[in-house]
Image 1 (tube, rainbow over the protein chains, first blue to last red):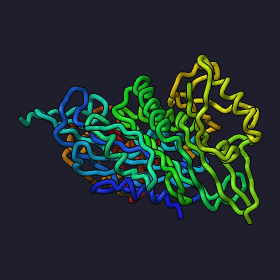
Image 2 (image 1 turned 135 degrees about the vertical axis):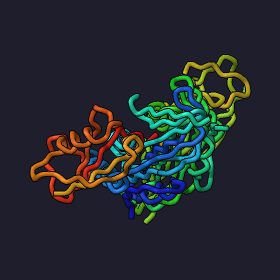
Image 3 (image 1 turned 180 degrees about the horizontal axis):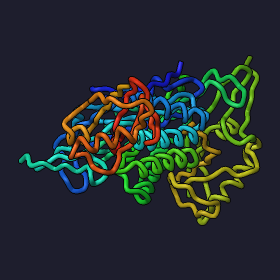
Length: 148
Length: 148
Length: 80
Length: 80
């Protein structure tokens, strides 16, 4: 009944479907983390956000995180989805849902899931702001270019 | 834009509305915990579940938990909802959503929210199973009565 | 003075009552009400539940006032 | 042997290329490809990114085989 899934999507993330798919009669608790694009970063007003993905590896990497979660915690199901392309400000760019019999596992595994996704899944965010653009990451990744 | 709410409801919990109401352009992360009624508890097969509430105090108590969360963590909004009356197996009975600029806060505050709700909010669960019924709680609360 | 006393969950079922009014002398505390109830309801368990007055948890020494709402709060089990 | 090399994000933009084919002697490693790329693309930063071969992270000493897919993985920034 419960189902794990690992996906990269171009359109809106359906958190309701995510919650539904990880649900099961034996799963007493589900923790969902939703990351939402912000209008501001380090003092810059963001006008547009775009995500680039190495899709085949990103899905594999999410699946590996899901496998590791199932090794470490007694969970029922894990689903992860990342939106790519242009994501409007205030929209969900990422969601991780974990269902488990008990909430300790659901919280710990969901936290591990989003932390590990951020560290390893090959997806890159580019911010467009007044006067430039910028690949988010360490400072050598800055590439401001006059636009306005 | 973001809104906190503290509610007791008789019908289905709308987690989508909960996520939407706590969202805001400055909130980068939202953690949602959903507690779902299980078909089994301590080896008993549950046929029906019913929650009783001291409604006025339950809502006040949830609001106090929300206030405490805002004192302890830098969050954007907190919403809590508990369903009462008969809740079908596999349905959400409780949901806690916390939005924050950063996920550390969103996770910690959501966890604190559900833990504290379980400890202090005056709501009681009664399980009906083959052969009896039972108020969930310490052993002196047992009140099995022959039914089948 | 008069205090409303509310019963919930298994305490409500055991005592067969949802709400009663208690006449009390001035200066009575939560504990005074609890002793009165123990004498009146055979099926009340001897260990005291938690108490709330006007929707706030209080201890047994809490002094009561006219028109207070005193709730007996058996172990809660929401959020599961 | 031939290895496909994939460029993403700021490395893609800096080098102006999304994918190239590299001809390599048998026994070449990821590091050999990286040195070749450094010589060929002025705008590659000298510090190496992470590398993935056939969708798995590997270290620089990883030996390559014909038809491998080698991806240069600059610091990732999804999940925000």
